[in-house]
Amino acid sequence: MKYKWWAPYILACFALLLAGCSSGASGDTTTLTFFSTVTTDNDKKAMSEAIAAFEEKNPNIDIEENFPGGGYEDMLRVKMAANDMPDLFDTHGWSKERYGEYVADLKDMDWVDNLDPALDNILKDELGKVYAYPVNQAKDGINYNANLLKEYGIEPPATFDEFMEALYQIKEKSKGEVTPLWINGSDKSAFGQYFDQFATPLLVTDKENNYEEELLDGSFDWSNYTYLPEKLKEMNENGLLNEDVLTAQIQDQAQLMAQGKIGFTFGGGYLGPAVKELNPEVQVGVIPMPPIHEGDEPSWIGGERHTVAIWKDSENKEAAKKFIDFLAQPDIAKKIAEGTSLPAGLANVEADNYYADYYSDFEGVEVQPYFDRIYLPSGMWDVMGATGQELISGSKTPEQVSEKMGKEYTRLKKQ
Image 1 (cartoon, rainbow, N blue to C red):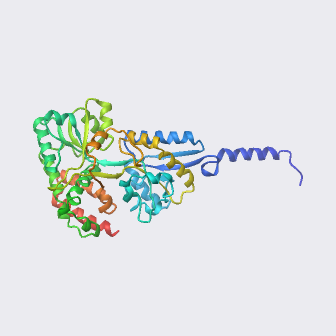
Image 2 (image 1 turned 180 degrees about the vertical axis):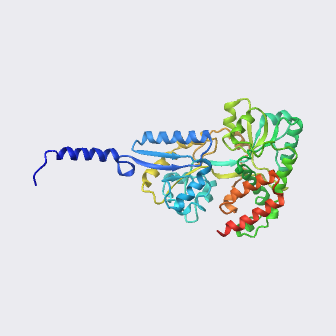
Image 3 (image 1 turned 90 degrees about the vertical axis):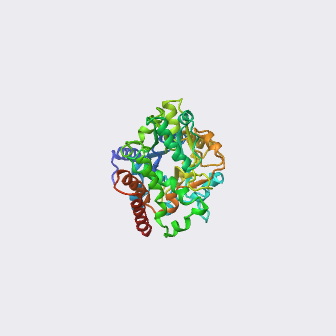
């Protein structure tokens, strides 16, 4: 065959074209897709900075982060159905129950030896499989304006009855200028937070009122839940909630707390630092969930807050493990924990976060897992939130809230 003089030029151009088009694991750069449930600006900043630091040290690995917020669960359900998951994703409390069959086992990674024992039951199974790396862990309770309580001579409540009394005192002593309990009810999950956090002291932690077995086997009598909607209705009818509770939005929370217009709220780790930026004079405190039944003890509500799991069918497992190893380095884990104002998920990392003194004051208080993650079938979180909105709007009574919870619990448990 006669050699064509232009053949080398064609081959050179073709090689350049291939080099320019190569991407993902097949070229010089491996691209990892990463979905996370982080929502607050501080949480996003902490995670994005960690990603940038990793990419700087590993220029051949690119991480495409995605923070879809409220759309996260729907997006992941679609991806699970198609068996087309991100390389890395957040299990947000459902590492075993919802995502278990999709995650790679991380038990052989070095950081597992330092996993906080409080997370063992959540992130490990009886065979030793480790489902995800815990970026941080939650200790949820009730946030409060410490300046305001001191001004009014109100002690942080130690029981639910004291909590209710504190709300009434704030209303009276502020002459209605301060919202005793502020809830961003435009988002139904805010009501879900109220029900979920108080369900544990109502139905789990007190020995005489423990319904764990019934909740797990499906025989629970939902009339035992009615106390919570009854109390929420009482708060609303007696002016203990913000007047705009059904339209209030989360972005107003920190500003109102900084202005001294909120007594108590469910704010999570981000609230204190956000308020400090707006008004350093205002101190945000936190207490564990107060017991409802006499003789019971307080409890934190928590478990892992954000995690990083690896899709078991990812073609980039080694690069994904490299990223998790980076996150587990003590200096990086500490920086993320402090950036998110939450304790680290590793026992060898001490984070100096906003609420450290409060956590120290309540050292020894047990951390209970989120109620819905243990005792309710998938889908019940939306039901809890929606029934809260219906209760406040007057379209449902407390008894009807419990009835709907029971019906949806039974329906979803069968699926």
